[in-house]
Image (cartoon, rainbow, N blue to C red; front, side):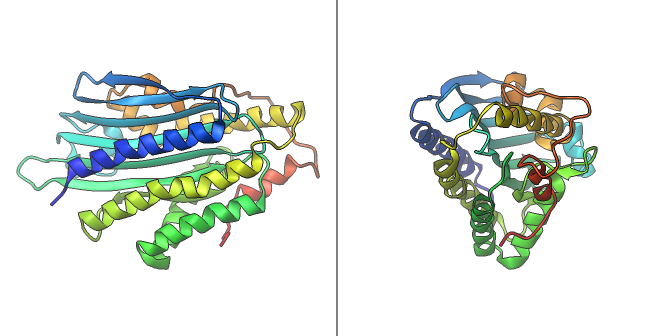
Length: 300
């Protein structure tokens, strides 16, 4: 038995709690809310903080949408659901800080349910969080992964942590660049093993654990001195974030193919980024050190 109402209420509350924590961490910025309705069914509320003291742009959206026919991005790996009515809901966020020493971060928790004709509902949970530093610190990365490991182990043992860490490393990989988007974290999709309540509990643990993983890094790095060189490198590396989201991200493709609200789907993109032909970092520089982090490794 599924309880889609409980998932809906949890996700709306999660958005509220994370917004309150981010406004407190920023100290000046406030989220503006944009509520919307989808013609095919459902709607959501998009919240964006622009030009805060800590966050150049922070976007967090809640959506609860439905449709009469599954979009291609979903049926590509579940062809048996082609033509089925569906409902999807989730909270997704991407925070782009001002300070190059404070990483960009992403978190998403979501639920999907399809109702094929003549069959029981098909449902699954998905989600995770990952970290994209420009100037990495081992202390930050180890803390991030320690929180991720604790969450996964408590809800599925070491095997779950190993699987969902590996999934994150492999999913957030830019094949055309031969590098990961960042230093990883957790990622899972199509989760329905163990029953609805167990899967929902894990989703809540991931959603609730995000602030535990993220806020200590904000406190340590938000006021780190930096100059034009670090800012230029931050903008250059943000270009990789754009490339991944527009080329590979399943959530972005699903949203666009299902007729989702474009502004809300693309609010994950940074307000500023740059590309430079033939860019190379100086050997031995702090910027060159990032490459050592853009390949999977065990952090905890």
